[in-house]
Length: 365
Ligand code: M6R
Image (cartoon, rainbow, N blue to C red; front, top):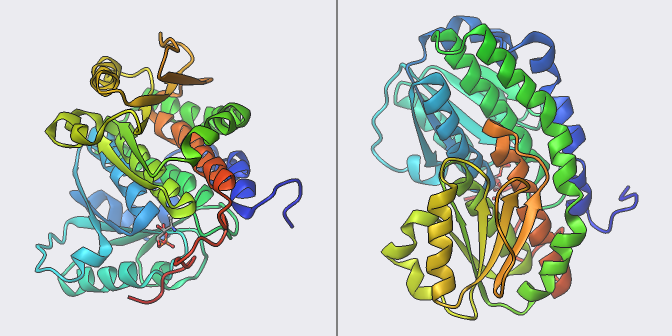
């Protein structure tokens, strides 16, 4: 079942070009049509005036990424909340807001209960982004987008996350289209970005030997920081969660601009700092954050784009992701942090597919 791979996690990381192609297929065939989200979507999506995303763990980070797309592409407000928090607070419900739950398994108890609570509060439009057909959460939702990642066995979620991002991106563009903010030319560009995505992800997978070469430097560490900005901040969060889950290294992620508001106090020679630094509008800002780290002796591990000017120097290690895919760059930049966590865990000899204390599907509180 594992083929040439040593663990399900590694296999599932490598399955991403296929999982993404399968998930994208319908969008490439039919464009960003409401029908992608189920039979009632043509009736419900035009009524949507805002989005509330509810999820846990990695799926929550997919939601945080989606907020950037939904607000910039669809031009409507989007808030994202951890399901276990939402379900126990006196929340404000706007029935014109679409509740979006994100869940690989479709059975996560906190997410299911948050959905039920949203319904009690008066929400009547719920969309489930899910990888398991006919599981509990999509069955309780009016709308559904099934990711086509195939079965995910490793406890650490990988291909489910990147395919969730595709579903959420499709939602942002579809809402943008319905609101007259995405014209035919823009729709074509977004489709083209999706078409190129599996190839870009494959290029990122080819970085595995270079990433493996970094893993020994991490294996002896107790702590690590991950930094990103904008769309890449949630990817930094995801990288830190992956590292925590399977290598048991304490890892935290921050938006790079927050460093000087506290976490910089943690940085010294023993702190590795992973930076997601694609060549986007925030790159210069990220570079100055990196200088703040270097000045305190922190060792930098930078994922940069091929076309950006970064040089390796003492304490600064750089891996270049081969191709930048604009608005979908967050998906491509997920691959290196997954591979890093995997190889650090291997170097530490942990049980990669079944990390201690964790279950694949969290159906209890
Ligand atoms: O099945 P779900 O997507 O609802 O699961 C949510 C989280 O339990 C899950 O993403 C968890 O954080 C993973 N172990 C992350 O790798």
